[in-house]
Amino acid sequence: MQERKALLILHGKKAMDPEVRAAVMAKRKSGWHIDVRVTWEAGDAARIVNEALQDDYATLIAGGGDGTLRDVAEAMALQDTRVSLALLPLGTANDFCVAAGVPLNPHAALKLLDKAPQRIDLGDLDGQLFLNMATGGFGSTVTANTPEDLKAALGGAAYFLTGLSRFAEVHSAFGRFTGPDFEWQGEFLALGIGNGRQAGGGHVLCPKARIDDGLL
Image (cartoon, rainbow, N blue to C red; front, side, top):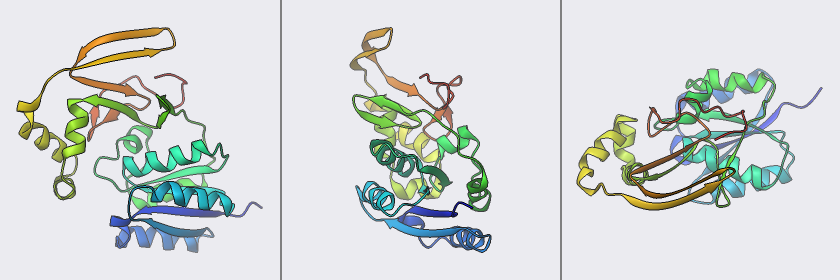
């Protein structure tokens, strides 16, 4: 029988979350060996992934928001590993998990550890990998400038309020995009290249996108 061993890479702001602790303890009681490593600053997730692969963990769990998920998934992909990735959605929007049908409740999310892994796609934009969506233009400006305390208080609505407060800054940008059988250049206000369906706190930008169809 394969050892049920996993490493949870947990965003530092969620380290003291009682619901997360209870979910991990419950999973341990069910027979899983789950270790926990906490991120503190940029680069921690990738470093922990590399250490986990050296220690022969069969499953990694990304515990955090879409940013934590992207960091963990990218680090795993760059190592070309066959280790499985599970998700513990703890962010403001959890756009990828919502679109993929991963439960937002920690106990329910960790139950997926007992399911067989499924292959999904990763996007590649100029050598930078992404799991859910690559965005640009005004929407990316809003995401980057939304305060953490506002996100903690309002969730996905924080992005909407930040967008309203910065609406006077809206202006077009020039872009040149190429891909298989595709080339376009011109002015644009917002850009979304979807491997998943939604971004920015629940905004469905690419409704036909699926994470396992080999398409963007």
